[in-house]
Length: 472
Image 1: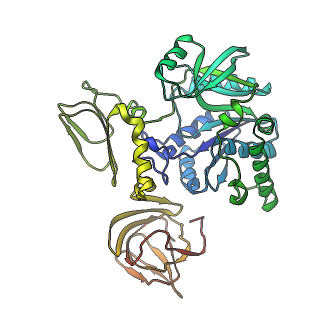
Image 2 (image 1 turned 90 degrees about the vertical axis):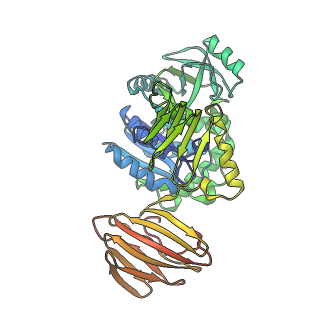
Image 3 (image 1 turned 45 degrees about the vertical axis):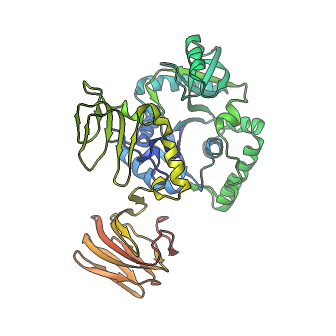
């Protein structure tokens, strides 16, 4: 039995302003219109998995379900929801407990990060088949990428003697200098560390107990809490925050793979990319004769080696060269291609200054739909709200702001204080501060509204929930 474990998280700070904390890298749409997560789900199913288990943050659950629904896969799917990110070792450990408990300790886990790209699915399937054979023999198996050049942005794995269809791992090496990278590639003994794995659930749990006792004990306590609280028979299992926050924040490489002598690597060349910067995204689009690329309505005049990504407007480049232009509704990135790795410094500075642009887009996804901030200023904020058919916001109240709702299309069922009524297109209702209220869409079409907020404080944290619908 093979269970594909999809690890979905990570802010992707080098891909700001598209990737943000509230809408991270796995959900980014590539030039073909598909997200990395959607492609990972298809890849996970294509290798013959009996089940797909997604380990992700609770906040990304509904977005992940939306991506999964687009695939229309005929395979069982499960979700294991983290209350907070704690790196890959805790995620893999919790997934291993889940798999061992539900399918048995001999079930194989194929661990796939949700933010990688694989272009050659057939070659990847061959590599997975080889990895499965080694994993069935009790090996911890990782996938190595045959280098195409001296890349300094990846970790390396030194390979040794043949082990079946793979090779014994001699050692893992951190991201090297350029000279070291050239030396590694020229030797022919090194491959890039892809961060993908295959092993039995019971084997990785035993290795964790041997090499990362603190992670093992803490995740066992988490799993005991899950089993003791309400079981885990549904398709969605939430990890309790009280015990999970005590798990050490460490990668599976550091915790186990670099310490174990039981690791094999399957080298492969299947068009892998970690999409680690805007250069990797740029290279997915074919250039014109001047090495210019664009994924939107763009115009290039006397320009060379310019990449433009946008959505809502024409972007013109005149007399420029060696430039990345990433346009979003509330932020624009201009960067030299040679410094694409430094984009994360923008995110760090935004965080330190408390600027919301590191965290949220102007349009924010919620379990019930989306909202877009159209305009805001002192004492007012204007939003466009879209509620999905049959969806509902929680029963809530605000201390500091009042709200005026105007229905543009669809129909709203509104609870406003003690009253319950329908609001139709071109009609409105007023929600005073301190009043309990709830918004529902009872129809079969999207409900589109304009919300005008007014008050002394308009932050999203001014909310008291009395009941929660769909984890909203």
